[in-house]
Structures are given as structure tokens and as C-alpha cells.
Length: 104
Image (cartoon, rainbow, N blue to C red; front, side, top):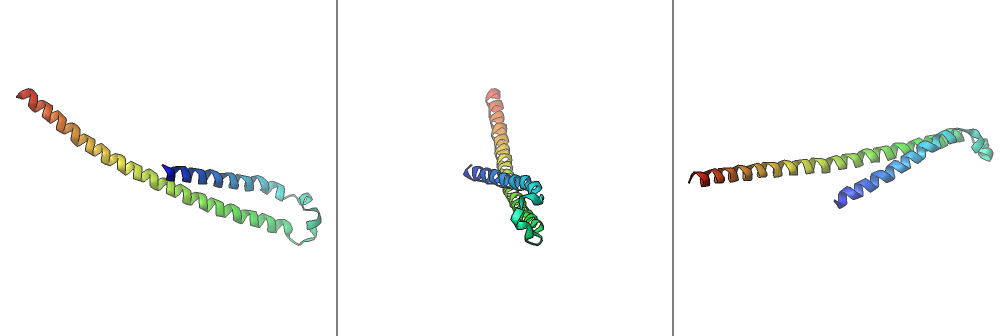
């Protein structure tokens, strides 16, 4: 469960970071926020490009985290299938034993 908790914490952090960048994008497109930096050629495009690169990295990281979650889910599913099949064997055995005892 520690792995699940760690992944959940990581995914929430990644989501917050991605959300923060997305919220900033609209503001970063407005030249009035650059005042003295407006003299730098293509400053707005450069800042937006850097934010988009960061967002892409975060989204790729989120995908990897989700794949790790999926791996855990598949492991739990396999475990449950094994437990289910073993329970069926035990139940069938008990039913057979009960039937044998009743006939005897």
C-alpha cells in the first residue's frame, strides 16, 4: 500500500503543477506583465514555449505514474483471480465432504 500512497501523492503533485502552468498560460500571453522585459525580442514566445515544455514534461510524467498505477491494479486483479480460484476449490471440496458425510 505504500507504493499506492506514493504514486497517489506523486500524481496529485504532478496534477497541481500542471494546473498551475495551465492557469499561468493566459496571463503570460499578455505583454503588459512584461513591462521592462518587452525590449527583449520574442520574450513572450520564449516564456510561453518554456512553460509548454514544462507542461509537456509533467504530462509525460503523469502518464508514467498512471501506467505504474495500472501495473498495481493488474497485480491486484491477478491476485484476486488466484484467490477466487482457490476459494472455489475449497468450497467444492467442502461441499463434497458434506455430501459424503450426509450419505454415510
